[in-house]
Image 1 (cartoon, rainbow over the protein chains, first blue to last red):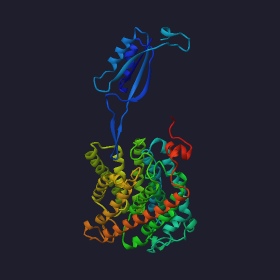
Image 2 (image 1 turned 30 degrees about the vertical axis):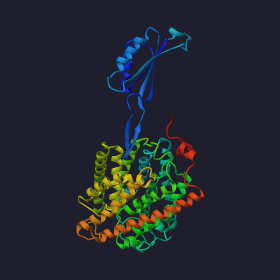
Image 3 (image 1 turned 90 degrees about the horizontal axis):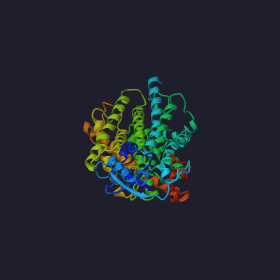
Image 4 (image 1 turned 120 degrees about the vertical axis):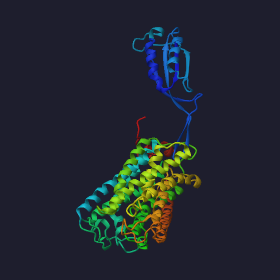
Length: 112
Length: 411
């Protein structure tokens, strides 16, 4: 099994969810995260005092899938989240040692 | 007694009281989330303790023996003695057509908000018990004499200085005290290195709206009658706020490239401060000039705290001290006897010469110096006895939890 993780622009999250559903994905986890990559932070000014905010708000998407689905799901995410501008985010795939569906106790591929 | 006058001052009293919760929100939005209840509490608490002190002795110290040209009142009205539904027993207030108890209530709302203004400077680190003692002592030792000098026919009024609704009594007074208090109190932990951006600007904007609204009572209510002077005062108040917002935003746009919501709010408040001493003494385009000038100058005055290396956290000095000075001194240029017959010497621009300007400068400097010096003494004594500041750990944890055992927001 694989875990496909991606950090994407927050406004892309609905489009991304729809694309994954269409591709047959039956579950995903989304969380609010802050960070930085190539895209720098931004500057805020309050009464003339400038503050640099280093961390940019993003959404992190995680999808568990079988080995053979991983590459296809990665492509779906990449396509849905891409704007071509700096700050589109990043995607990575990890090997997963085991998965269990808590309700039934099903394991690994059966639990996805 | 006049029903119209009484009605308007009743409404104005409620309007001015509402400014203190407005101020609480204005300041509360600007602090960090872990200190917001501390800030709200300090402002609301001013409504609690200062009203009781006012009824006890402070009204009498401010307004007893009015018209004596002196330094402080007496105890004739202490504990609400002779403060009733009839006209003022003071010959100096013969002209009032409202109940003396209503005058007492109206002035009480000023006495509440003036010390509360100081909380913006001391944000995030002043111990609650020290705050309670400070504003109580300050009301007696600083507010009551200065109010007597200016509002009750004391020596500054007799000299010829004018202050329609409290440019000196409220704003220079509170601003100078704020400066003195932060010099004794010291900086917030991490200032100026650590970013301390406002945690909730929408809260600040709501507070600004309430202040703006309430200021109609503050200034137009200070006519103490429902008359033409009140009408001029309300127009002047709103025009000055608007012009000052524009002035502040122009400076921001040129300096930082963006006009900010906090700048719009701060500019409006600076204009309201500056028009306060002038509200019922000027007319025509004067409020726009006064407000516009105040907006520009107060925005530029933000750099004073960098130059002076003091941590006036929410810029009480730049907005209230500088704004109060701008308004009080500009009155020496714009005072217009055709608006208000109480203007004995017209301003420089109306051909009245420099007489009033001189009196305005003296009144401003004296108020500033008196408030600054006495505040330093009060602050030093409190610091040496019960301590002004919370502990370092309490400051890091936040005033909400450390001072009040509460948190504002579920986490």
